[in-house]
Length: 457
Ligand SMILES: NC(=O)c1ccc[n+]([C@@H]2O[C@H](COP(=O)([O-])OP(=O)(O)OC[C@H]3O[C@@H](n4cnc5c(N)ncnc54)[C@H](O)[C@@H]3O)[C@@H](O)[C@H]2O)c1
Image (cartoon, rainbow, N blue to C red; front, side, top):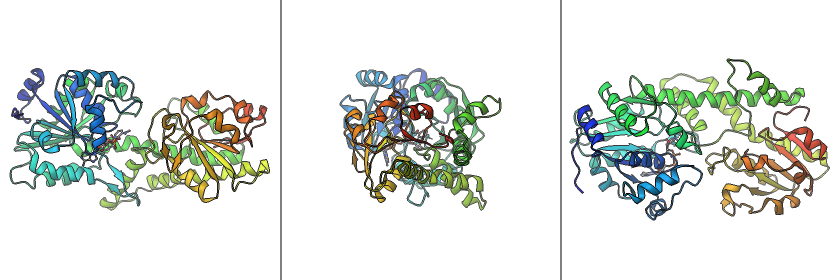
């Protein structure tokens, strides 16, 4: 397959290649965000190839099995683009890159065990691009990175090849992804997106391409680093605000005030943006994005004390969940040690199958260290092994054998459970870390109830 050369620095050539559907796209990293992204490019009529190091994922995709069961709408798009051969997957980065004009990177950006950002996937792929990138190609980084990472690192790694000179014969920009797992199709077709290029011309070219594929509002930023700064600011805003309400909720518990009631009333004020307390903050974005900004601050020689405190508070919330639980056992006169406790929900957020940095893991480990027998029920992981525990396949069977239940994730399914089911447990202790249980109905059913931030409950 020979690559039709398109000068990705020339807006007329790019426009013509979109209209004639001759632009060839390669998306590297086809996970939660990259796969829907690649499917959207393919749906717009552009020939798209997805590259991933995960052989099983590639096999699954090429055999026609859609791997993201919790992303409504993309299953149909997947079937169509596979059927009309607009999309396929491969582990072979060489052919995929050298036959494409546009390379989109949707690689993971995580943190290591010391919460230091880990950009190794991006660095590894950038090193490969040095040898594989065709001249006049455009690279767009959708992964979340610190401001300056593109200009300082990606460009210098790719430019190591004497063949490639930035702004002369290869081009780079960013379009940071901000979709919500479980709602990606909705978000891709509704949320405005940020665009930042290595120069203004590239910003305009990326805008043209994304307008063709996504038809959403595109916000042009002065450069890559400003676009990445906006992306981090919006997520870190949430991490810090969750820490703020979580810390307040600990005090409200002591003062006999129900945080739910406070927030329901507070949000009536026009300039109050509600955030909810919880057992900790997980997922591939919020905690990592805060650590990314803290890393930027360290490099810039400044201190971001509010983000630092927020992280400490959110990291300590699992301890409070364990404390609430042991407190409830005291009321029951049942020994906490050796008890049987069921964790309801392991996903870091409701209605998705995703356990990345989920607070459930810390809560489970802490309980196990105290000699407690921990069980797990989560409809998204039925019969799978999660955090070393086999997930129960039937809630009704396991509940009566339990001394306590801790609601960690507010999956919609859990909101439908009747309080009377908890009353039938061996010891009826219920800990709600997500504010989904009405304390008075728990009391009516004689369930020993503790709600995170629910004073007087
Ligand atoms: N998931 C989200 O909610 C979300 C939302 C917005 C932005 N983001 C950002 O999008 C980026 C991707 O996140 P994700 O959630 O899709 O991650 P993911 O882990 O679901 O997918 C990443 C994929 O990249 C593959 N991969 C890893 N190293 C590779 C390599 N060297 N070559 C080829 N493939 C490789 C993995 O096998 C995986 O399939 C991250 O920067 C993340 O911060 C994620």
